[in-house]
Length: 143
Image (tube, rainbow, N blue to C red):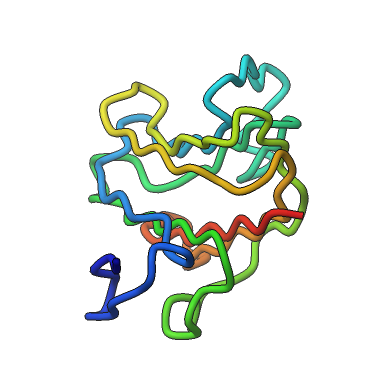
């Protein structure tokens, strides 16, 4: 089985978790384990564009007035065409005890769930690096 990817790519499900294109009302992209209770109360988006809790990540993206944001999630190394021209913004570990992650906007108006293969993921986050991020690629590879 394959998924239709970005730029006309057909990708196997073992590599491509999926994509979400949405207007992010408050400009916050959330990636989290579905059981996460993280609140990110210490996050100051004026100081840092990304904030990691053990099982949750906030990424500052363009607010809805700027336009839609496209997010692609990979569960293995993405084809180079997906990350070409993007900047690595974060390389770290994300805990995924439920074996399912959710990508959503902070208002829960848009959401996507993806199953992952282990309880701990090596995570790399790429963005287009502009002040108003409108392209994000997240790579989760089970340890």
